[in-house]
Every structure is written in structure tokens, then in C-alpha cells.
Image 1 (cartoon, one colour):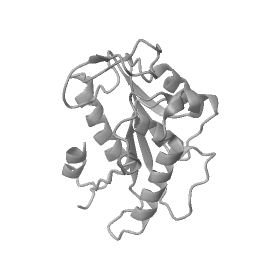
Image 2 (cartoon, one colour):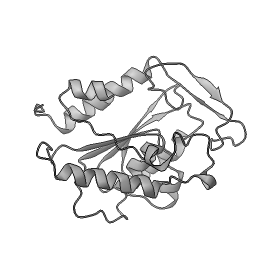
Image 3 (cartoon, helix red, strand yellow):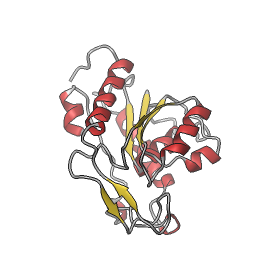
Image 4 (cartoon, rainbow, N blue to C red):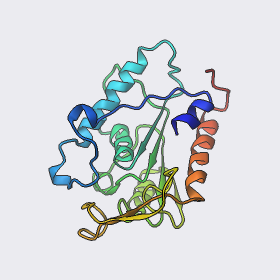
Length: 206
């Protein structure tokens, strides 16, 4: 994705919420035992946006926030209208959330402070699409459900695998499925580029 965005003339910054906190992955950790939570990741995004606000090369009118899975949930958490953002940070123009977990946001009457588009897998048994569809309809958000697609369907390599050690799926104790869909994965990445072009029709200066 970095290479794809750079080729289109965008700048890319990826904040690392795990390594500085001595973590490499959250996938096999239960929700109750996780030390890295959405509040931490939201703070990391706020700090990154504050840093970007100080850079001479930043186009303040064209800032997108992208996230996948737990990072997709971070997009929701960062855009939540109930959270008062730090004054120093930039306001993203659009958020793109790949297969986030939407159950909590749905229960808490989430509403986005700026447009958020969700890219969801119809066959996702890790972070199911149904709560996100309900959230999108309730909060007036755009979304697209990709058929026959599992969690991580846009992974550029690999294939669908059963991950028995993941505890937080739709069917606790049974693991989850995740992996690339050779058709919908590339389609979703093209959809990201198309959404950005629709949002910002003028050419982006490198």
C-alpha cells in the first residue's frame, strides 16, 4: 500500500503503536489481556497528526487516515465525534477502515467527525461485517462489502488460512480465517485510490 500511494504522489506516515510498547502482534491476545488498547493507538494517531501539522510539506486539505483490523478500529476511535481532539492536530479529510471491529462503536452510538468509509469482507469471521453494516447505516457512513472475502482479504500475498489461536473471533474457541482474495483484494486497493481521487480531484504535487 505504501508503494501504491507513493506512486500516486501521496506522502505516507505509518505510526508504530506496538514496537515501542514491546509488542509485535495483538492477534493472539484476548481483549481482556491486551496492554495496547484503542486509547493508546488513538493517542498515537493524534500525536502523528500534530507532528504532520508542523511539517512544511503537509497539505492540510488532503489528509487521509487508513487502518486495517485493529488499526481500522483506530480509525473509528480517532474519528469518534464524542472524543475532543487536541487542538494541535490536523483534521483528516477522510478515513478508510479495512474490516474494523464495529460492535463497541455500534453500542456506544458512534458518529464520525469526518467522512469514514469501511471496506468489509462478507465472509469475515474475525471482525464480522454485519455490525459494521449496521453502524454504517445508523451513522450515515459509506461502506462496501466484498463477497466471499475473509479477514485480510486485501493481503497482497498468501491465501486463506485457519488461525486456531486467535481468541477474539465471531466463534470464540474456534479460531478465525484470514487471507488474500485474489480478486477482491486488488479491487479494494483500487477502490482506495478511486476514493482518494474522488475526494481530491486535483493532481497531488509530490
